[in-house]
Length: 361
Image 1: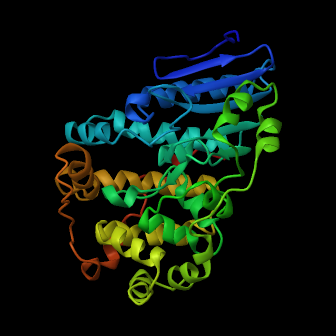
Image 2: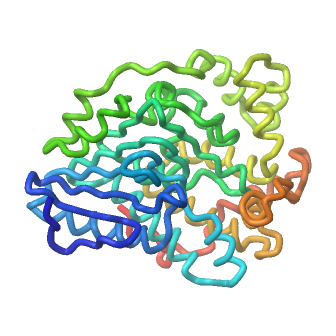
């Protein structure tokens, strides 16, 4: 491989253009499961925008790295410790992070060249944002996929409202509210991946002069765990409101229902209601509008009640800072969540002409 022009290789994002016309991107922050920093987002944005207009680049393929070498974990999401530190310090770069990350997510969905995402290992949060818009989303038997933001008092952003709401039936509400982890077969069955390949096929796809075709040729069936429960999931999470769904869920037997109840019991009641509304609203919206809505929502997550009362900062504190795993949610019970508080997350803090994502087409 040779380095191409106008690239943005950095310590945590390594980019190369081969003589075969393939632009190759490696997320290289394995000690943090390739969690995204602002500098990584900017390197990705610069690279993808340059390659979009570079005739020497025909295709793009992206992978994560592991402590023991290439591949392994794709991306565990955004750097939540940074979120906590920046918000508490009043660091304006936090605003830039979400704006620029969502711009990259949109760019991938509309990218003019084939973009192949090798979604090995952990693929969560921001990792989904870097992969769901791909022309080919490749999973492996090692893939662990989820949008677990409810666990930290956040919501499935990076376009999560868009791609989760497009899952079959009301699987999207289930995945969003519970943060359920999916393996390869269910990721394909639910429309969040295009094919599963053996882990040992990844180097061949990566090195191929046509990664898109190589990935398609290597795809093979993968077992599912949750797909058989789709009708039951739909019956519960297709109900008109979250309280109705939770009431119905309490009456259901089976592994999927037990796992859902256990997960929801630890999540922010307020954000569960917000997430439910997010998925329902996003189902009828184009991607650019979903991303603008999510940009409004994430601003409110950190500023609506002030930093001291942020559900997101409390969730991150409990999980990753103090690690006591005992978040003090406000309110503490589902029945105490007020409709006006939920609705407030969908009121934009910016006029349309000043919205950070106003230029998304």
